[in-house]
Structure formats: structure tokens, C-alpha cells
Length: 143
Image (tube, rainbow, N blue to C red; front, side, top):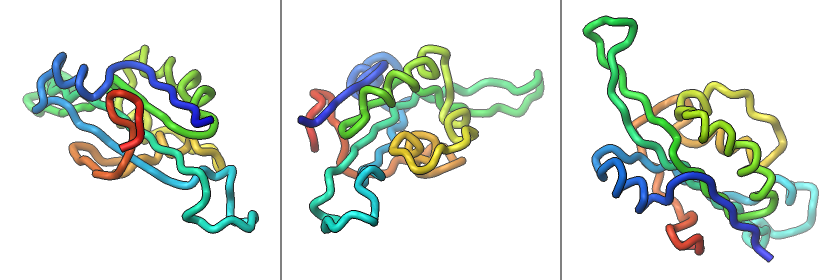
């Protein structure tokens, strides 16, 4: 049984709420670290974990200056794979509190866990990019 969990908006809901020009999506697909290199399983046969982070952009002034800074607030997280239920339970608090992609990037990744992917998701420490890899679509199926 594949575990699927999400918190917040789907990609479609975020686009409807904030507009397509204000939505940035980060994706990742990988072999779960539970199935590490010490097991005699071909990498292509290892169960995959797929993740999606959906952000909305917001431009604001920093410290009253004329300099505008854009931040990406995380408005949705999706996971398919081993431990998805536990990951979403933990990260759900951050999403509900208005965490940004930069907040996630600033977290210490706990290794080896699959959940570390949310805090090291490409482009780690950067914003305004989309990595196009297969992940969860809006009806929570693999794409």
C-alpha cells in the first residue's frame, strides 16, 4: 500500500487562489532512504517517494527600505511514499504557521530520513525556480 498525504492547497487550488504568476512548485522523486545502499535491491526496483512543495510569492519591503524582497510562502505539501503520514504531521505545523521556502531551507536536515528532502529541496537556498520531475498531481496519483 502506497501512503499518500498532503497539507494545504493542491497546485490547482493555489493557482485559483493566488494566480499562476504567483505560484512556484518544487518537486522531487527519489528512492526512500529506508531502502539504502546496504540492501541488495536494484535502484530501479526500490520504492520511490515523491514530494511536492507549493509556494505563493509575496513581494514586500524589508525594514522600511525601498528595497523589495520576494518571499515564497509554503501553501501546500504533498508526499507519496513510506512515512508520508508522519512527515505531513510534522510539517503541517510549519505550513499552518506561514513558513516560507527560505524557512525550510534554513532547517537542519535530519539524515538519513526521507523528510530531509523537504528542507533540502532543489534549489536549496534559492527561490523562483521549478524543478520538473514526476510527483503527485492534484488527484493524489502518480504522474
